[in-house]
Length: 347
Ligand code: ADP
Image (cartoon, rainbow, N blue to C red; front, side, top):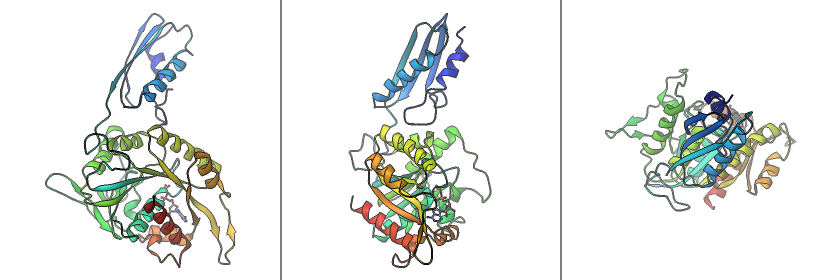
């Protein structure tokens, strides 16, 4: 017998295109009616991309057809426009939707621990060393490491009378992170809708001022915070951080697919922990060799940087003085970040 519960269970297998979350947990399923063996599903969705409802429609049909004895399947879509970007209206290509911010660069990874925050933080500093005005927004609410990496965990961002958040300033950049708002060791208890609201606040209600670049440190993976971000602001380019081994590359591929689905251009791949260089200059490919290059070729985007595995990079991140502050002549990692910044500036 077909029941509403059975139908909902099946709908829970249908993913939002490009994301790991399903349409039930995204709250898109507005109603399920079962009449005998016939099923009617109502979906409410905010998108301007006709491919998204089409893909969801196909997904629902495929999932429901696996139910024994299923009769007619009727799927109704209520399609609304997505939330307006901050400036109102769709920003033109290459334009940012946060007033005063020229370019938004999202630093993303498919999985955690590949060095995404390290890349975001050092890239922001390396960009500022080119003379650009730079902001860093830590959207990784559950693992906010930017505050620590900037050595600014004790800083308290101020609020204006209009309830806007004033980012802190450290190492020549402006930054905001959940890490500034939480007591050390306190767990991050924001979930679901609250996480979405915090993210939107960071993006919409921060006094970023005039910036050439706003670097976003995205949470790992392809969940609802990523969706919120790409719906809230027009991201100009995404950088995909991966380590060279297959497990990281598989997840990086998912992240790439997500950006493609939501029309965010991928500027390129950054291969982190590409090799370890010993004192004699020999390179050891601890996580495998060439994975980043192969993935970049597969995606048809440039391999923007290869960052070596380097103990001073980790030490300086922990002590709040990022490696990009070192003279590039004295650190191969600082040099790699300086080159990466140079490439982004010239895009
Ligand atoms: P993610 O944001 O992907 O979870 P992090 O940037 O927090 O990863 O990095 C995880 C850990 O690895 C941190 O301790 C960081 O200092 C270290 N790390 C990242 N990149 C490198 C590197 N190239 N060499 C040495 N340690 C690194």
